[in-house]
Amino acid sequence: MYSHDSMQQAMRIVRDAMPPTPQQRWPLLDQRLGATVWLKHENHTPVGAFKLRGGLVYFDALRQREPTVRGVISATRGNHGQSVGFAARRHGLAATIVVPRGNSVEKNAAMRALGVELVEHGEDFQAAREHAARLAADRGLHMVPSFHDDLVRGVATYWTEFFEATAGPDAPEVVFVPIGQGSGICACAAARAYTGARARIVGVVSSHATAYQQSFRTGQVVEAPATTQLADGMACRLPDAQALEIIRREADDVIAVSDDEVAAAMRALFADTHNVAEGAGAAALAAALQQRSRWAGKRVGLTLSGGNVDSAVFARVLSP
Image 1 (spheres, helix red, strand yellow):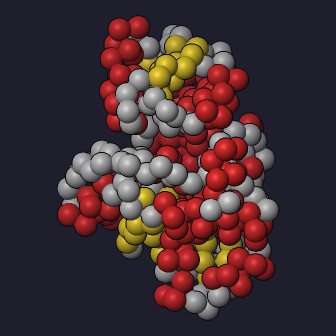
Image 2 (image 1 turned 90 degrees about the vertical axis):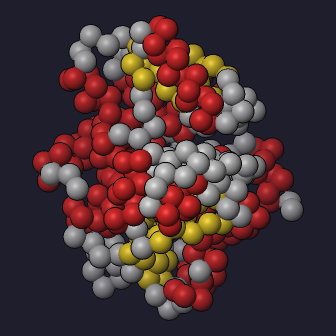
């Protein structure tokens, strides 16, 4: 999907800012799923989520394409905004982030701590993104998209680490990947092609935000409500057409997990690994648990894609 040189360049850019994250075997997860389980800990990046990698590569390319750019803007539910803030600060750029009203309190605080100007607007991500586009035009700011080839190349570095580290007789036969705007699962496909891995890819959406699942099945972009109360990283109302094309070509299936299943997976990750997962960060395990009978005795790859959950929310999840 991307040239060998461009993938290696992305690896170098990311490695300059952070070390590889671990992929870990946890005996209790093996026991819980009845399978050989590899868990990739993207909750261990400097912003607690995989999105950072995409921002680092995107901003490196942006500086080369538009050397006079002074300010950027984007929309997010949190982790993409932290990625933008972190990378913008490394390149000396001012960053504005638009979030929907009622967004995660602690993600908002983390973005402000990175020096971004935070703007609250709209009831969901799509409304925030539309407002960000208007502000970009009004203020002469560069609009950082939620899906872009450079973001995908950056995110692909974590799947490259994963596939290279798990190569051999214990290589996963399937990987489960949460879908927000699509960079994570498209990056998984890119890394699979780059490394020669052969794992099947199963996308995971929230059953309260099924736009990508419906679009995957119909072959065209389908807008659907995003009402998840827990997996805000998967609260997509309108899929990206380019991402959808890649997902339909590369993924075996796209399945949906409920907020209750996500909460159970968050509890399981804490019990089995003592790692904190946000809703979207636990979605891969939720999907694997839902599909447990199909993959019993097999080799399964999961991502803990982010750990940025508000303390009050996590307390409620742990005490159902």
